[in-house]
Length: 574
Ligand code: TEU
Image (cartoon, rainbow, N blue to C red; front, side, top):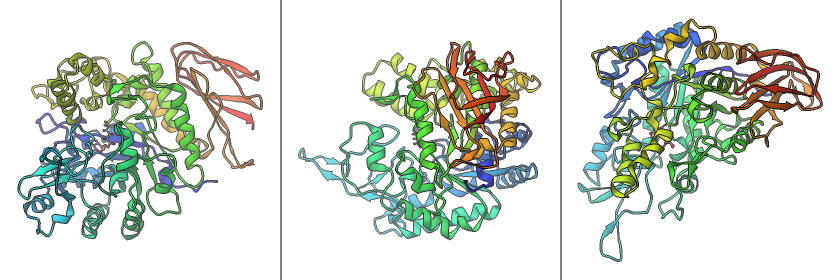
């Protein structure tokens, strides 16, 4: 039986502060806005809030470019506001985890300003500087052929000292040099600073990238291969994480989740196994990168539903022995879950609630991204000027302006994949600015025009709403610990419509004290017939997302699920 702890049983809610609630009148969400909306978050029944970065930042990448790890971004408020927010979260019985972005800083961080000033500056080795190489053409080139995550080369020439610095993300996000013990000490001090303030843990941004493998050209054409084979899982990553855990994190009862581009099934457990003293869980990208075509992020391909199920199964198995998973269908970097994995047209409500059921019945800690609880959808702005995300804008420059890709074709890809799909303001009500900011204020990014139909106010008091369903599904998970800890046994891997799994209340054949659950999901627009495994008998219907659900208790070997029906049963047998 797995060890039981609070962070395995917790449900997490992610807030992207820029887009949550403006109170100061600048069209940008802020900390006081979050304070005002804490009762909404509490009403959902979640335990932990993950707050995307709120530190001082020039916002080249919306706060993922930190200029001061100990200061609050002025647009978001003050440290006093932060303290009040933390207190408000704690008094409601919730916890707060911060976003630690420590693979890189902003180029406006004081460390980088010193580092770039002179080759003999104390802080020179805080970052990764290399001389250029002269090509056969006699022209100076970057040290390697590496590309950045956000288009263009990963090296930027800096005239002040005539060298290049590494930036795996934008040129305003120089990578820190974790080989330097002084850098590791600085980051440990930052972590301690926030833990001493009373925060309850961290989500660690691109933690898989902090140890570099050396600086040779990548032989890979596809960017995701470069991430996996060249950028991620460097030789010292586990040592660095163990050091941070041992020196700081282990002294507090907190949770950690590492974000892991390039972490595969083999590497995953080594970051989180309970014997390793590193992290509690990671976000893997198995199901987040699966709809990228050969051209990468802005070359979308349809979701392969069988592969989607396999990803869940493989990761569950990989972590079953002493590891732990996070379960998420969306965050601030990927499209809206209901638009991507559901059907945001005719089956909007059914598919959004089905996805909620999947989140709350898988093994692993579930993460809900703001707006998911009301079924917010992708947006499709016509003009590139309506987009704000640096990833989208850089790709537009590279692919359309420089590369000659058809602009309409690119925009269609942005509508499917762009990160601004999830960054439009939270839809609180149907007033002119959806309650996100005052009506005479221009929000930093346009609203999704469907806010008149999809908003919190419209769902708050409706017992049939997506919001009401999220509340029920979260409460249901918390009341049935077998859904947290039991094994996962999927039996419809080949099926084109069904994702059905058992959560048996047995561990290695012996009863573990929890009930056994069968979760039946029809992830398609057509009805589907479920053939039940012969060894089980569904004994009690517990939960469904449709009001006209298939609740007929059955001792037979099959049952029919309606389009996007989710149905949870207690079962007997093994
Ligand atoms: O994202 C890391 C990451 O892998 C992303 O680049 C992801 O692949 C991409 O957003 C998909 O389009 C983290 C943060 O979550 C993201 O918001 C930051 O932009 C990035 O790190 C740099 O800090």
